[in-house]
Image 1: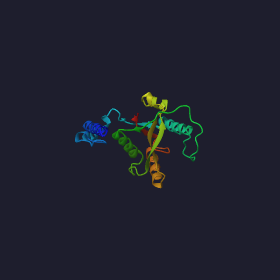
Image 2 (image 1 turned 135 degrees about the horizontal axis):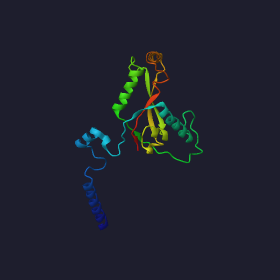
Image 3 (image 1 turned 90 degrees about the vertical axis):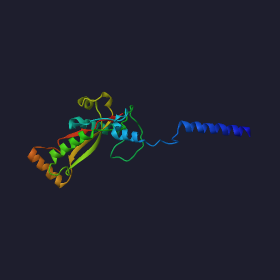
Image 4 (image 1 turned 180 degrees about the vertical axis):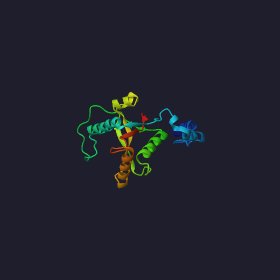
Amino acid sequence: MKKILMFGSVLFVAVVYLSWRNPGGPGPKPPTASTSATAAAGATSAPDAPTGNGQPVTRAQYQPCLDSFVSVMARYGITSNIPPVKNTACPAMTYPITTSESFQASGLMAWMQGVIDTYDPDGKGANLDFQMKFGICTPNFVKSTSQAASLVGRIAVFIVPAYRTTDAAKAAKAKVSKTRGVTGTDPGGGGYELGGLQP
């Protein structure tokens, strides 16, 4: 009986102590007004938050990154046109992971609006697509865009504009080609690198 009372007393003291250490109880505490305001004002101020401005890049810059992504994934047995099969071999080296990517909204929006104004002024963008494409940063890409060497080998996201495959888009492309001398399968052959790779 004494052992039960002693065990109960110790258990009671432990519960009181833990309650004192964590007054909010189990689970995360709800945000206060000040923490909510801080988060809304700028979560990017946190040391671990991904940041980046993003920048326009030429096809000559981003295409090798897109090709590298396809090549590396294929070495891991990941392709877009085969059913799942057992992996019998793996490459000797791993690649660093990219967990997220961020961009400055105003810079991206200004670039997109510039593409629309140049390549689809009458349609206001209705005849354009903006495609998200994945690439792996090559040494040449990192060097040509003056970025940190630590980004080599990381997966990056590029936005590439293209005309839609509709009659209206073909007409818009023909008009722009005639009046502005723009040719090619997509608007200018350029894209936008989002920037802000994390980590």
